[in-house]
Every structure is written in C-alpha cells, then in structure tokens.
Length: 286
Ligand SMILES: C[S@@+](CC[C@H](N)C(=O)[O-])C[C@H]1O[C@@H](n2cnc3c(N)ncnc32)[C@H](O)[C@@H]1O
Image (cartoon, rainbow, N blue to C red; front, side, top):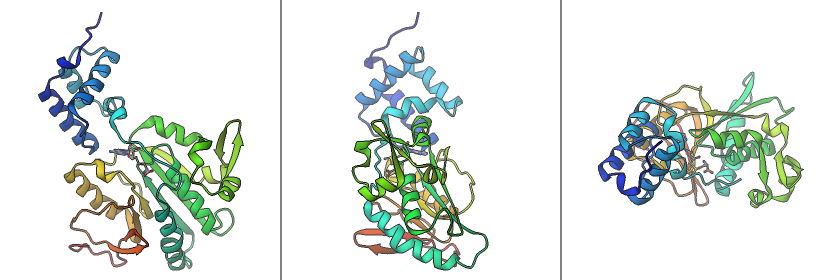
C-alpha cells in the first residue's frame, strides 16, 4: 500500500532542486508558484507510487523520459493555426521569394523547414500550407521537407493524426480550409498532400542534435520559457542549424538574446524576421 502525501510533504528546497533538474534537462524554467508545483508533484508521486520527493528527484536524474509526464501540466502548450499571421506573411512575402530565387538553379531543388516546439502540429501544418500556396509542392520541381519536433510525445501523436476540431480552424481563411482540409464527422483532417510534407519527431531542444541544415526554422514561443543560459545556448544552435541565408521565425514580439552569432533582421510590419548572413562567418552582435 502506498503512502499518500499532502502538499505540505513537498518541501520548498525539494521544489528548488526539482526546478534545477527540469531546467537542466529541458531548458524550461518552472516559474509556476510553489503551491501549484507542489500540487503537481503530489499528484505525480501518487500516480507513480513514489514515497517521497527524493525518490522522484532520483528518478528524474536517471530517466530521460520520466520528467515528461511530470512537467506536462506545467508547460505552456498554447498553439493555433497561423498563430502569428505576420510571421506567415513574412514567410510567403519575404523569406520564400528570396530563397526560391537564390536556389532556383540548384539540382535537386530542396526546401527544408523545422518547426521546433511544434506542440499539436498547427504550426508545421500552417508552414506546409503557406509553402504550398507559394510553391507547387506536388509538381513544381521542389522537394519540400518539414521536420516538426516537440519534447512531449502525446501532442506529437495528435499532430501526426492531423485531426482538428472546427474551433481550431477559426483563424484559417475559408478558401484554405476548403483546399487543405477534409471534413471527417465533426472534425477536420489535414489532407494527405500536406500531411506527407511533415515528419514529426520527439526532440529535446535543450540537447544538441544534428538533423541537417534548414532554410527556415520556426521556434515560436519556446525561448521565453527557457532560462537565460539555455536560451542563449539554443539560439547559438539554431544559428548553426540554419543554412547561410536561412531565416529564423520567433513569436511576435520575441527578441533574440545577444549571443556571439550574427543575425541580420528585417521588419515586415510589426514582425521581425531574422536571417543568418550568407557569408556565415561567426561574428559578434546582430
Ligand atoms: C507555447 S508552445 C508553442 C507552440 C508553437 N511553437 C506555437 O507558437 O504555436 C511551446 C512548445 O514548446 C515545447 N517545448 C518546451 N520545452 C521544450 C524542449 N526542451 N524541447 C522541445 N520542445 C519543448 C512545449 O512542449 C510546447 O509544445
């Protein structure tokens, strides 16, 4: 028989330790009030039949995946189709025309995108639809690949299904709904020609990985949840993962921290899109 704990059993110093472990493993700064965090910890201990917070800390240190269920209710997972319309406008009006012109003589002609922190898939599918509106994805001689990743597996499973409630499509213009979605009962399914462009994979942005270089990286509303040191390290890695001339899309109003890599930037209305210089020698400032 396992022991049920109350919030009072989770001590403040244990929560501090937990915040540290999660920050090291995921980059995410758990700034939820201690009371909320203690509540989540208590529920987790009960569900996992763990006797104490020390057991939990031990488990988190030894297992890459154990923290996933724990931090799930604490991570901000908000997302929408075309969440920041100005970002997608900048993709189709600023980035894509320049990339297409620059790469038009390449053979094969390939475009690579990464949605880093994609939650339930609305972001990568919005990228795919924007690209299909600009490039003929199925016959225009361009190979389009979109990698979409998140640390949480459950949202990725939903994303892979590509099935959304009607309310999720509120911001999608009706002609795009007609062209890229099919109604299935009460839901809308992303059509296969768009789904086939996207590959979903679990990935922790706090860890270096190498998945090739990209023409565009979307990392929207992820950096603000990271601690400053993890944020700076991630921006340096994102710079490295971009092709020379590649574009970085952050959430509306997000600013790049000053790190020792060079990004050019341009404004499209209120939105700022960042670009890795063509001559990508690492320099100081932005
Ligand atoms: C606020 S949502 C943003 C979703 C999407 N980018 C958008 O703007 O619509 C942040 C996402 O980042 C993911 N995330 C947080 N920490 C992460 C990490 N260390 N590695 C990968 N994904 C992470 C969360 O699981 C969540 O799905």
